[in-house]
Amino acid sequence: MTESIALIPARSGSKRVPGKNIRPLRGHPLIAYSISAAAQSGVFERILVSTDSEDTAEISQRYGAEVPGLRPSALADDSAHDLGFVQQAMNEWVPGDDTQLWGIIRPTSPLRSASSLREAHRLLVQSDWADSVRALRPVTEHPGKMWRYDPVTGEASTFLDQPGAFNGPMSELEKVYIQASSFEIVRRGAVFAHDSIAGRRVLGFVMPENENIDINSEEDWAVLERVVAANPSLLPTIGVR
Image (cartoon, rainbow, N blue to C red):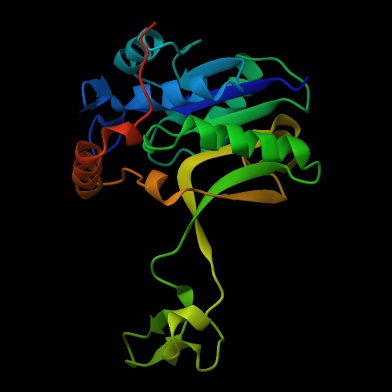
């Protein structure tokens, strides 16, 4: 049976929403909801947190995750790529073969459910052709309606070569999606073969609409608080171990 590992990235240096990974939300730190969703999905043998913060490490352990060590500062600054901390965790924390599956589960998407993780994992296991599965959501601003603008000449030109599409209704445009921050699940072998947390061939998983809030700003946080105040059951239930 394929081994599956959950890896929750939680560096401490967010500037737009300081301390967001451990900011309280309805009585629990934000990261607790991702730890709980991973645990309740039932597909991960281990749940790890990658952080450079001792406070985040202690909180994560209290909610049931493992923190085998702190992330080096070079892998935790604003310019660090996700590939670095993922490969560090694979190389130093959990030995495994190329078939091992790693779920990268971001704490900034607390409404992502255990059932979505479970279903995406199932689809990847069944799809031998795919290196990974990635969460997607429909775009709210379509690239078919986007323009380039030359500030020197003042000329505007369509971003895509779709003659007339910019004047037509949205319903006539091809449906396109943007990657959601909720999660990706990737085969270990693909990470090293392609130096990518996605690999080469990606299976899409369209997220349920009510799971699509990603926290990237204080405005996002305010929206999240309003949504969960109106419907607390959208959050995963929490168990402290």
